[in-house]
Length: 117
Image (cartoon, rainbow, N blue to C red; front, side):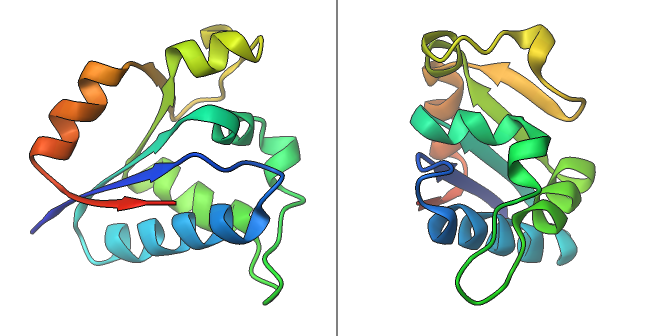
């Protein structure tokens, strides 16, 4: 199987991109691919599951279902400086979310097919 890396920089201000990113990541995980979503910039706010539960695309797709699947079958990484700038600490993250850094993002990108949202 392939490795897929989804880099999401948009958060609550752009539910369409956020939902679409996680929808495609869910499809990749359902197909058995090694899938990682890396949250940067305002996308780190999506680690707040209460916020994520209320996000929908104009098509009616809800973010939370896709996010939960990726959380269970893939991995979700959260940019450390992006989270710190938004006062999100590692202790604030729910299970299935891991703090990470730029060097890890580059290492993952070197070995994966990359999608950016």
